Length: 122
Image (cartoon, rainbow, N blue to C red; front, top):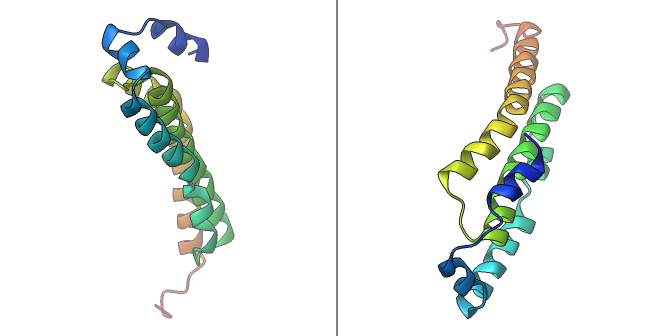
């Protein structure tokens, strides 16, 4: 899916959305959305996790993907006011294949670490 496809489907705002854009409530909501958008940092929080390097790297990328997913929702909400199910489904469809790849890397890394363990020491 092209990124422009999302924008084309939401060009027109409803009368209520147009009113919301020009209110103090919208400005307050806009500030909240921006704080949430810029406050995301799932990837950075994984840096201190005491695990193997490959697992750590996979978790870091998974965190980056979660940051991207959240940022897409926040950006859409900021620009259009509402994230409906249709938009959520589009974002999910776009990121799902990447999420599956990252999850497989994570599972492979954990399995690899488990195979090197001497289970007598556990």
